[in-house]
Length: 287
Image (cartoon, rainbow, N blue to C red; front, side):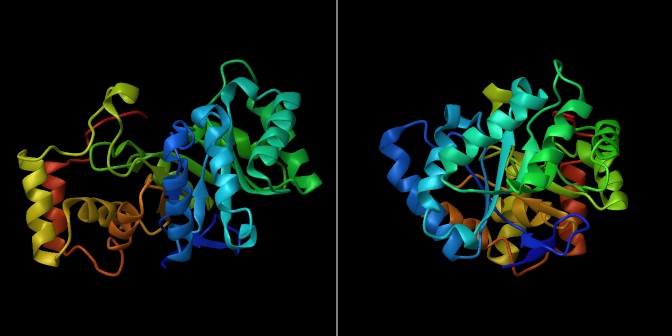
C-alpha cells in the first residue's frame, strides 16, 4: 500500500483510506459495512475516517465494532461537530466518540467545519488539552480556508496542525489555487474527501460524470488504455498530488477492490492533458 507522510510528523498513513459517511444509518447494512471495513484494512486501507455527525454517531459505532480486535492496526480519524466546538463541548464530544468507537485514543481528531458560534482559539485550546491527556494523538481541521488554518495553528502552540480534510475531485479543484499550496508549504496533509464527486442533494454540485457524457467518455477511453475503469482513472488523478491522501466511501468489498486498482500505475502526460481540457481547474464546487 502506498503511504504518505502525515504533516511534519514521522508517521506515514495509507494514501487511500476508507470513508464511512452514512455507515450505521441502516442496521440491515451494518454487517456488510463491517465486513467491508475489515477487508479494506486487510488490504492495507487502514486509514478509517468517521465523524460524530455521521448517522448521529452510528458510523462511529460501526467502526468501533469493525476494529475492536485490531485497533493497533488502524489509523483512526474522527471529527467534532461545529456545534460542539466550545472548550467543554470538544472535551465532551471526544469522550462520547471514544465510547462509541470503543477505544481509549483517537489518532487524528478534526474540527469538522468552521464554527459560527465558537472561536477557533477556544476549540484549539480544547484540542491541545486532549493531546496532553493522551486521548488524541494529532490535531487537524476540515473545510478550513488558509486563513483559518493559520489561526488554528497559532492557537495550538507547539502542537502541529497536521491535516485539513477538504473536498477534492475532478469537478472541484478549488483547493489547487490556495489551500493545497499553503498546506504543502506548511507541512499540512490534505485529506481529500468525495474523490468521485459530491452527492448533488448534499452540496448541489456535480457528481461523477454520467455514462454517455463527453467527460465520462474521456475517462473511459483513458481507462481502456491502462486496463482500468473510469473511477480508477479519477482516483489515480486525485493521487497525482504527492502530499495528499484520499478517503473514498466503500461500503462493499468489491468497491474496495476497485479502489485498490487505482494504485500501481501512472497517468501519462497525454492522459493528464485530456483530463485538463475536460475538467479545467477553474471548475468550482464548495470552497
